[in-house]
Length: 190
Image (cartoon, rainbow, N blue to C red; front, side, top):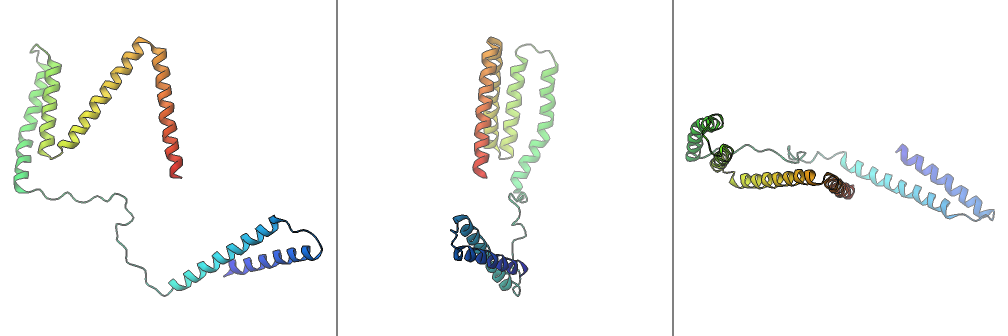
């Protein structure tokens, strides 16, 4: 109410000044008219807000979902069916000894390609774990990402060894492009 009264007095003062200037033969500029229009617009907004507030005084608050403020609500993991729990229990009993056997492959000098054999064993164990937990698609996506990242890192390392100046320049250009894209995306959000 006080803001509305202050706005009315400011409008009255501005109108009186414009009328006095016009009656004195002065040309009233568009800036003075724009200022009066802005004050009048603000007065109308304040009155509308006052009407809205008056209408809400007697009403109870609308019921709302207690989780509506959460963007990504975590829900409890559903209870697994009995056969699935059994599969997970069996895998948990077998997986730890398998990991120890895998570590044995790394420690003992068995000859051959120990690194290749170890990588294959680790990949098989992770795949079995993903199948047991019904996360095979997520595992395959993660595997593809790791392979692509490994290839990219190896390519960058080889390029740095071959011609470090050109490779460094290309890396800086790539970083600049990535930063530009991220900054433009951020600007679109604002």
